[in-house]
Length: 392
Ligand SMILES: Cc1cc2nc3c(=O)[nH]c(=O)nc-3n(C[C@H](O)[C@H](O)[C@H](O)COP(=O)(O)OP(=O)(O)OC[C@H]3O[C@@H](n4cnc5c(N)ncnc54)[C@H](O)[C@@H]3O)c2cc1C
Image (cartoon, rainbow, N blue to C red):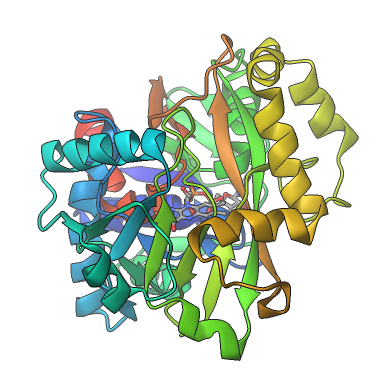
C-alpha cells in the first residue's frame, strides 16, 4: 500500500516508521518545515509519562502505559539518551491532598508499579527544597531526548525504503478513483494520514471539504531555565497535583536529559497557532477561534483561569509565585527566560476541552484530530493503535 503522511512531528514519524516496517508498504511523509520536529514534539518538557492521572480505560491511559515501555526499548536499542529518574507529585492543601489520593487510585487502576506516598524525611532525601503537605513518588516516570528519537525515526523510515519530503506544505489533494494525488505530484497514494498537530483541524477541513468536528485552540507553554547555581534545587521531576478539570499538568520542575533544569510550562492562550511569544500574532487564526462557539463557551466558564495564566506570561513575578509553591526558596535571580511550546488542544462545540486522543477515518483518509500530551511518550503505541484499528 502507498501511504502519505502529513506532518513530521513525533506522531507522524512513529506511524510512518511502524507502517514502513510492514512488508508491502511504501510511506512518504510530507513536512512543511525544513526539518522534522520543529513544533510541539521538539518544544515539550521531554518527560516520559507513565499513565498516572489519565482516566482509566481512556486511550491516553492505555497508550501511555504501553507507549512508555515501547519508547524506553526503542531508546535502548538505538542508544538514545533517556533516564527513568522518577517523579514526585505534591499536594499543598486539603483539596490537593484529596486530588492526590485520587490520582494514586487512578495510577493503581492504570497498572502503575511502585507508587508510594513519601514521609517527610523520605521527601527531604529525594528533594530537600520541596515544600509539601503530602507527596507521591511515581518511580516509573522519566526523561528523554525526543529530538534524538525523531532523528532516529526519520533515519529508519528512509533506511526501510520510505521517503521524507521536507518543505512540503500540503493544503489540497485530488481524489481520483480511490487514489489520492498530493499537490499536483504525479505520485498517487492509497491512504493518507493527517498528523499535522497544531494544524490538524485545518488540514481536515482542507482535505475533506467538511465542517471540522472540533477546533484546535493553541495554548502556549512558556518555560524558565534555572541558573547553574540553582540547579541543586531540583533533583528530578517535581509536579503539582494539578486541577483534574484541565489536561495541563501545571507549572512543574523538570530535570532535562542534557542536565539542565527547567520550570514551566504555563498555559497561555496563544495569539497564533505556531506563535512562540506574545508578539507572534495571526489575526485570521485568532478570528478562527474567537468566532467559535466552543471557544466562547470555554472562556465563559474559565475566564479567571485564562487571565491567571496570562499574568504568568506577562510578569516574571507571577510565574515565580507559581513556581515558589513547590520550591519556596526559588528566587527571581535563579531563573531566566527559556523556550516555549504551543499545545494543540481540541475544544468541542459545547466548550469542553477534549481530554482524550481523537482519531477518525473518512474514506481513504485518517485524521488524528487531538494528540496532546502524553502523545510524545505514547507515539509508538498511538502508531499501533491507528494501524490496528483504522488500517488493517
Ligand atoms: C509545552 C509542551 C509540553 C509538553 N510536554 C510533554 C511531555 O513532557 N511529554 C509528552 O509525552 N508530551 C508532551 N507534550 C505533548 C507532545 O509534545 C505532543 O502531544 C506531541 O508532540 C504531538 O506530536 P504531533 O506529531 O501530533 O504534533 P507536532 O509535533 O506539532 O507535529 C506536527 C507536524 O505537522 C507539520 N504540519 C502541519 N501542517 C502541515 C501541512 N499542511 N503540511 C505538512 N506538514 C504540516 C508541522 O510543521 C509539524 O512538524 C507537550 C507539548 C507541549 C506543547
